[in-house]
Length: 324
Ligand code: DGY
Image (cartoon, rainbow, N blue to C red; front, side, top):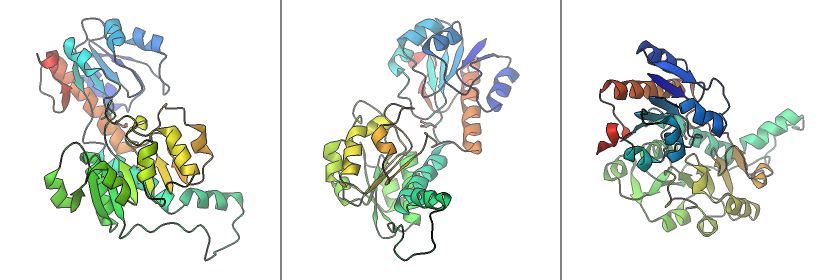
């Protein structure tokens, strides 16, 4: 059986797949295949390991043909996969929840601290040779202890980010589709409507999935409700934020700063963001640790093998055969 793998992955994935007697057909590169190359890669495959930048839609499923039984997305987010199309064709869908929780929460905090403490500007100053020595008023940032951390989406990653906030002495408020009562108790977090969260938070950290409902959740109006000193952190998906409105809000001082790991049109970044001092930008690094990317590779390979061998898999977004 053939497994199409759309990018070079940590070697454990290939080892597991080949160890199970499967043939790996890999786009053996770090850059994405063209759409045409992707469609030809999946032709006749029984299994697919894809990335968040690969659109798994009707056209791709057509190109794969009726033999495709499983698509495993090398990400927790599934916004690139048409789950209903997969379900209708009996293609199981796996993803990688759990193993990237801490890595992504760490990155949210790395961005937050970098913005709050002006690390990027400090780094540039030192490298430029322009630093003339310690100075009482140089690059003053914001303290976080005693401030309010607002979480949009208290799922696994949101809760892990909130836990870090508690460790930094911050109060936590959160919003989402439903209340998470156990987490509320554990994190001493208060559930509030989005509008209130925007108004009371010193940090707004986004951890919700990209869905039609969350697209541009943070738009001009939402940004207008935030504090002028507030920092926006996005490690979720780019389209949760209206990037053009964010550029305006940052330029006009409507909010204090932003730490962004994800963008609306990756890898294209709104040019307005690039020129701003109060912004730290990362190239979608949320899960990018050696340990986490290895665990993700293991997870997708094991899911493909289990589905093809008729075994059980935790965390399937669509069960084998589409679940009908
Ligand atoms: C995910 O898993 O959805 C991240 O964005 C990529 O690691």
